[in-house]
Length: 198
Image (cartoon, rainbow, N blue to C red; front, side):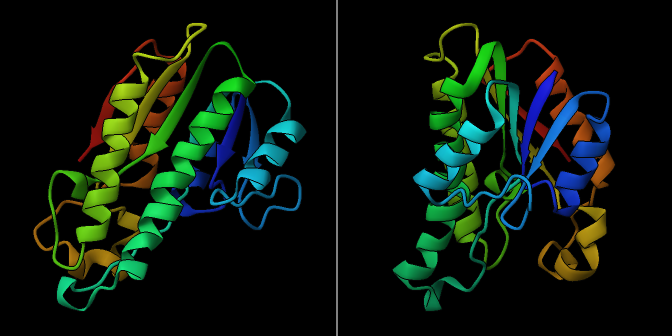
């Protein structure tokens, strides 16, 4: 299987690449030498898809959010998550569907705060919940046997030192455990699912 992995250089992306290493994984990221991409830009995503050619799966572990207290948040700050993690991943799906072989799949990344809000996380909750709605709606309209799912991991164990204070009482999960849900999405049969790894 030929898999395009966007966000491959991050902690989660590296774990996904390892879990799917029995396939041909094309590792794309903002700073990749071979497969550079900026998911906030149509032309950049289109250029990436022309370079990869047809693939069997697209997996996204990419996307930037804004964390900060709501009373001080500006519309421009809120737009960070909308333009990057939300529209960036939607852009990958909209353009990427045409680069998939019949029966191919798309897997996007949301997060636990879609269901379990945290302080200073209104942007993340809104973006992740919107992504899940997109996945569930898009699953009914994809053609040629294409599938789409999302993975919603808890805060990662590897990131706990940096983000743990924002998640009091939450149980972190390892990136390797979260990566198994991406394998289930890519190699399985389901569509319109949100795989929660909590």
